[in-house]
Length: 257
Image (tube, rainbow, N blue to C red; front, side, top):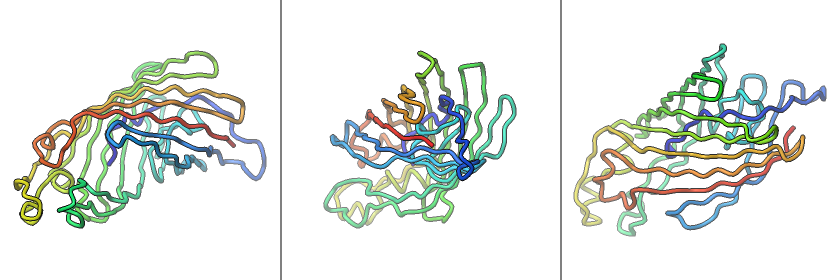
């Protein structure tokens, strides 16, 4: 699971296409450049957002077309809403990763890939304030555990074609999730010399995200997003946790349809 992000970013509006072949469809496609302090490098990837009625698939919510969308990475289903509440379900492929770059643990420190199921709800507190909660779990039972998050965001229209969003989030996870990423088993201890560590459930991190999204043209949009997060809870005592704070930047531009 990525660092906690307030996934309740409201979006600027864009009328759906009137072309008969695209009726009910909307989306955006374009490059996204991102990097963070710890990795000290930039990654360029294709960003996409595609929605048909209540079903969407995306890898960046900032490409969402409709202002009322709540968009999460992966496949999403909008379960419905009223004037204040929105409810969503989502599926996301978690490809897994190495939890450390220690050569002694190569092959013994990888989180297994899995599919994560996510349920989330957001609530419109005031015209420009939103709050939300979310829960995700390892759907295939591969040791991915469960993650919980909560957040609040504030949107400010800077001009008719530009919006700024500031969000704050807090996340926590169960012991299975914590141990897969920050625990040191007896085997890992023998290979690396690190002390055995088996964390319990608890807080994961706190985050702050600020983004500016602009309609460059009726068919084009761009965004800049800056995020910072701080590790919390049991992982701070893990010998695998080599950093406490991190920050990152993402920039993207997309053609909408």
